Image (tube, rainbow, N blue to C red; front, side, top):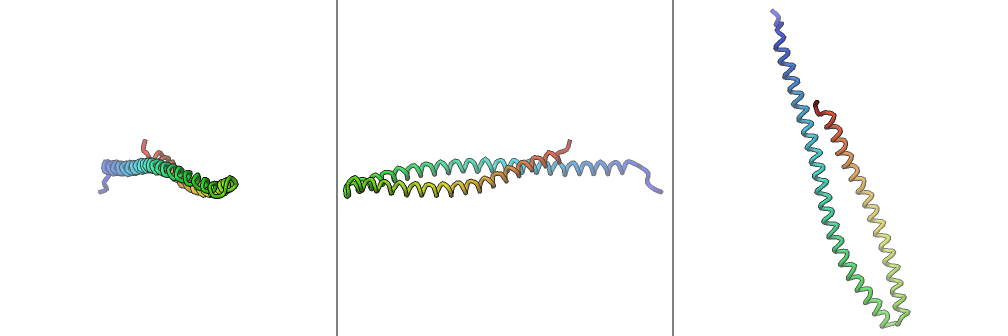
Length: 140
């Protein structure tokens, strides 16, 4: 005889629904943790970048101070050895060299910043896509 009792079929459907619900909840939790991890990594990276930028600024300030004293001494030496004309020529050459070097360094830094901007945009887009995906699969 065929089994016509609907109870076992209902139990299987309930079990299947529960299993699907469990998988969906697990995937939603995974997506949420993925987003939380990405946010934590971004915060950590910003904090580390800030610390390193501060250290670079301190080092650059000290180097600039030392370089300024060196240039003043160089111009004073030129004035001592060759008079006011030599002082003016030395100051002019030093100025041109610094403008040229500063422009080159600034261009290179801007290029690197634009490259990094793409990486940050990629991370932001990944977090946004993960959030949208998690909202789509979240039950209820």
